[in-house]
Each structure stands twice: as structure tokens, then as C-alpha cells.
Picture 1: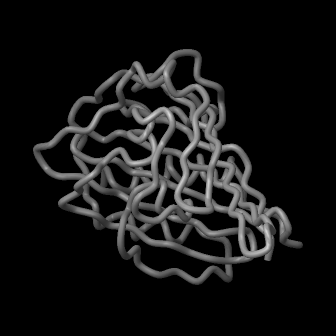
Picture 2 (picture 1 turned 30 degrees about the horizontal axis):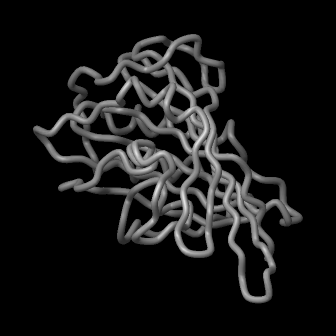
Length: 222
């Protein structure tokens, strides 16, 4: 099955901007966000927002967005400071999440963090990572910014990743990942939808991922 890796787009929204999902942000997210009450176990509640027929399993292993895009240990970012966008929490003491597969793609919803260790977005990355890439072995990805959903009191960022893997004989497989991240004080929540451009089924797409992040944050807030 051939996967088309489209560009991983990241867009930001000022905390508390109150925009609708998918509405372009007019300014960047602040470097940090105020404390947000989070109940990590509640991420299981948004499984009910999946289309019918999806098979769901709990997340195992690394919970970083890059891992959900298919990049294993040892991947690198260029420029290197953009690593923080693909792996915002390097050592989350608490991680909850699930992965679901179906006709429209693979959906991942994750919350990770450590109580007492706030996580924020470095404002400088907005300019420094306007266009960047990551790589691991025969796999590479191109990343750019896109509009993120606005959530009251929460900083958000949107990513769209174009992944290409060169396999034996020089054949390329491609995939597209839409990722939206919310900075929740001591935690980061993110939703990623990975789609196969060669699939005969319509992809869930960017709007679905953005809306699912809004629902995920609402569930985590209790």
C-alpha cells in the first residue's frame, strides 16, 4: 500500500483566542500557558467520536507526535531546535492515549506530561521552523505551519507532515499526517491523523483532526 507523505503543517493560535477549528490564526501561541486542570484518563472518552468500524488499541511506546508519524528512535530534525515541535514532552511521567485504524486513516489521541513540570511553546520556533524536516534512516518528512483550532485558555499548534520512505529497489512509499497539539500547563495533548493517498476510501483529513483535538481537550478538562 503506497502512502503519500504530504507536508506536516504547523499553525498556532494565541491562548484564549476562541477561533473555530480550522480558522487561520492571526498571531502565534504564547511561549507558555497558564495551569490547566487535566484528567489524563478522560482521553478514553473521545473514542466515541471515531467513525464506525474503527479498531482501537491503547498507545504503547513513545508518545511523541514524530513516533505517531512512523519515525522510530534516533530521528533528527533540521534545524535541530524544531525537535521541540515533533517531541514537545521528552519524559512524560504520565501518558495516556489510543490509536485507531480504519478506512479513513490511522487516528492517534494522546496526553502526556509530568505534574509540576510545565510545558510551553517557544515563540522563537515560529520563525525558526517555518519550514523544516526530520529524518531517520530511509524515512524523511517535510513540515510546515497550518492553522490550528482555537481553544479558550489553551495554546494550540497545528502540524502537517509529508513522509517519504525509500524501500528496497528505490521504491518510495508516502503518507500524510495532520497533527494538532494543545499545551495544557503540565501536559501536552495531541491528535494525529495519518492517511494513505492511495487508499480508495476518503481520508478523515485535517478538519477531523482539528475538531477531535477540541473534543479531546474538553474531555481532559473534565
